[in-house]
Image 1 (tube, rainbow, N blue to C red):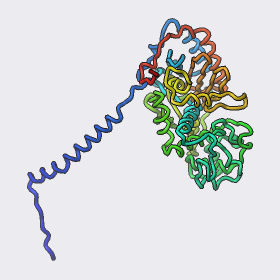
Image 2 (image 1 turned 90 degrees about the vertical axis):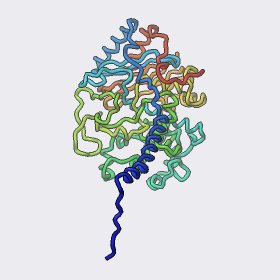
Image 3 (image 1 turned 135 degrees about the vertical axis):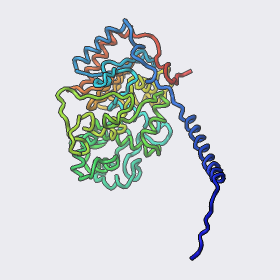
Image 4 (image 1 turned 180 degrees about the horizontal axis):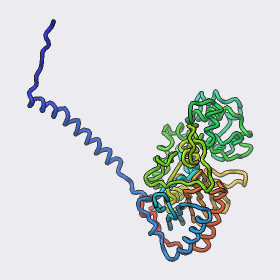
Length: 440
């Protein structure tokens, strides 16, 4: 049996060895942490600086009362309003409650789900990729020469017309997709059952499933509003940029626009962001089955649908004030530097006819009036850009029985407020309180 040599270190030697080994590692970790901290210096967000008091004045008390009556009429728990004129933020105020159970008042710094207003952000991302030469609006989406040329999609396609779908057709809701079997983005339970899935589909699985269904019309021949089309655009952004969708949008769209507190929303109350509101369904709304077929009954706004899965079709959340800032960066006005070219602004807002959607916007008129709406369980959002350069944005944390039709009522409220109190809004720029990218 061979003898084993026992090596004994004295306490002094042992301590010296530990110091020699651990100290450099500790110093390296601290150096790296310091480098990360310097690279990730927090940017001053508009939401951190705005308060309700900044937009409180005797001159606009009558407008406040109009808005409060409107909220009472529609049983809205809370709403955030922001008004911009010629790229200057004049007014930003919260009304009612951000979280009634916690007695938390709404402020302009709260963020809310903005639903399909997200499509305007996604469309802007597409235009930026176009300007960089990474795609064309006439590029096809599927097939060997398409952007989403993955074999799993090609194999699922049986109709040759699908290979002709273009990026522009997706932007204008003219790609042939309809909701005849339910909106794919809001019928997860049915898709799990129909395709015998183990759980909620990821984006790739959802696309593969939907591509097996027949189109509702020949691409380009008609239009039908399609949330699914904007999911495809989100995936196109990922493929063309080589970057995850949310990361690309934050780094290349929102931050250059001066928006530092917008995020892809989560599904449940427990997953909300620190300054995110609580959402409420309208009176009489019944619990529904959870989107993932768990068997649980949930509030529609918290688990009834896969909000995060909407991606660029409807998942962004942010404040009305920062949303104004984003609009200012794509409106062609000289006050705030645009993040897209003059040609892209014109292309996004070009008017054709009443049967053609604009790029990202719901509707743009030859007069210069632009509209973008959004509705989800627990929220309603309206962006109204008027020909005189004034933009009004309201986002609520409560549903109404009118669903998407409620934005027409909010538009009417905007017009009344503009007529009665537009001249009383102070001539100032609250954007100057946050990080600024104004033209010099």
